[in-house]
Image (cartoon, rainbow, N blue to C red; front, side, top):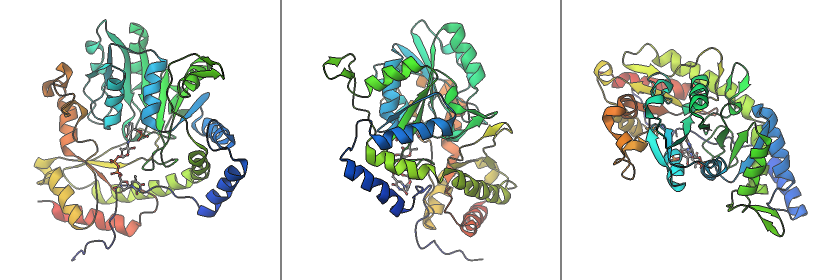
Length: 376
Ligand code: T4K
């Protein structure tokens, strides 16, 4: 069978786009109110809807996930060192840097790509103020073990759940674990507001602090009680979000079908590893990564990535390079590759395939067929 390149590029993801008429109708309300930002009516609606959807006590919406995470570190008064994963998007580590905190990189688990909780304790020093863990690709970290460690050493836990919108463990919202959890609502995320994000937390007083911090520290017209920043979500973002949220459950069903099709076609190929979810997990279905075992598959990840491009399939090497190998972090003691063997191995061999509800099943089959033909 001769496969021709796709006419249009097939990207790693595409944003969920609600009916434009519905968004416009909502925007008409925004226009007539002349209220464009600063905790407006659409913001209040979205915050409440997200609270219910994520099964959490408190939500604070933000203009993006990175600012949200920076504010989370400020609110928890983190300093010194924070133990974190190198296998993540640049933002996770940069946020520590922006708070004058030294990231201490911990290796990851081979099966989940999440921070290896068994390796955290030996990295704790008197300077450690928190653990910043990432639920990579929407698969939850070992939240119980992380909580036990945090309690033992009296340190905080922040989760970067940028990929984990709607992830649940035994029916419990992923945002109920740790001191504070960040979600990203970037256009590439399952649920999005074009740009946006949120912090969620169990502690109501912490939400109050965070709400001040994201609004310049303003308490009243004449009282500025904290050195805050501008992290506010505006009414245009919130309007988009309200309509996108309506589509998330249907999108999950579509992604589940696509995931099954990938698994059907790829799981029996020697040298291809697929991320599995335990039975008690409801996944957010964010990204479809595979790990290439070059010895068994006969070809490298980089080869597959560039060959797919020839067919107009734009896969991504999430997350390569590792944060610990960035120029700005590679001199840190914890960045030594010897201490991060699994993270380095996964980063060098992982590839994320196109994964979004609007993807045709026949296109998924074709992508799998192309990959099969690449095997040596
Ligand atoms: N923590 C983690 C673990 C994260 O993954 C992220 C963000 C953050 C923190 C920070 O959250 P935010 O501050 O962003 O809220 C993208 C996103 O920009 C970034 O939000 C995301 N993670 C990261 C994993 O992916 P790029 O540079 O790979 O994006 P880009 O522009 O190459 O987009 C990827 C593909 O998506 C494109 O090839 C096509 C498609 N796309 C993209 C956009 C922007 C669309 O179809 N439409 C669009 O509007 O970083």
